[in-house]
Image (cartoon, rainbow, N blue to C red):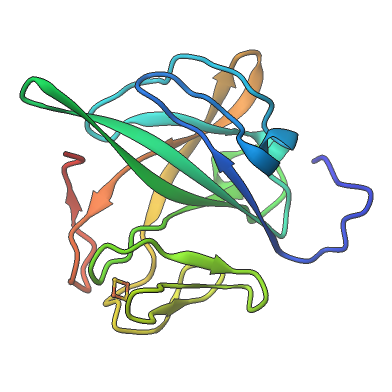
Amino acid sequence: MPERPDDDRRTFLRIAVIGGIGILTAGAGAASVFLPPRTGESAGVGPQPLIPIARLAALLKEEVLSLEISLSVRDGWRLRTRRQRVYLQRVADGDEASAFKALSAVCSHAGCGIEYREKDKQFHCPCHGAEFKLDGTLQKGPAPRDMDPLDVTVAEHEGAAWLFVNWQEFAMGTEQRTPRGNA
Ligand code: FES
């Protein structure tokens, strides 16, 4: 696994913007350092799209990578675009999907965007104050459950190993995690 020479083993945040309608565009701002600009077909658009979200080489242990994906949803004749945030972490060595964790930033209380607070190394929701541990476990409500995990898979993309995320939304306001459509 690649290691940064100056890695001080702290958990910290990197931010990237990716996404598009079947198109992946990486890297605005700081993220372009880690995810060079590129385009490519996504694996699918529609319910539970499988999106190439990051090169494995860009995912280092003890970091939280914040990625914004852009989802296209056909609504009659209109094509709506929605942005969603995904937090990625490498939780073990190796290149298997099980070495990575992806968490949706959609808060299960009322749908606000959960943020990562580097100084506390935890997630929090700015709307009503819910707090979550680094692994997404609920620490303080009113969110009714842990952060929602997203399935990931590893596959080749543009000649390199990439992590693909299976975007999914879940019902809000319930302790039970119930998948719902992506529209
Ligand atoms: S929407 Fe997150 S705590 Fe209310």
